[in-house]
Image 1 (spheres, rainbow, N blue to C red):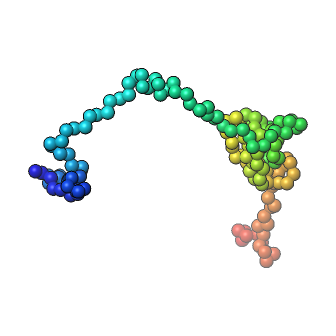
Image 2: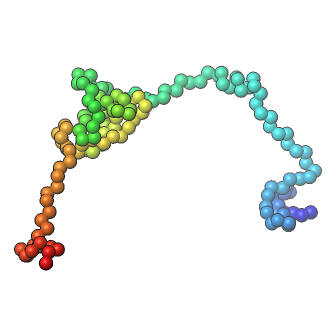
Length: 150
């Protein structure tokens, strides 16, 4: 015997430790009959499983908001603001319907799924572009020569 019993359940040995390598493993009785190995499913069983009727799966649900068909579809630009129900043409995702509009972001339902896109934080539609910062006065606050000159 090259193993030491580590755990028993009732009178049955379940775990042993090897004296040679020190590793622990499940106990395999030399007197028991080995369990049959599970055979792979036959071709017929696989075909029956594949042909069994399955419930239809809808890839993506429908948009939560109906599209406003009275207005034309607008091309998506991050500098513009969009309203709920508007149709948006995106260069990668195609045409979609705006479901949620928040300051700075908009959730749009496309055929490929929902996407959160950037939009203007401004209140007005359009505009909202970047502005040039005010020039910085580099002169000495005490009214002397500009900083860096001697």
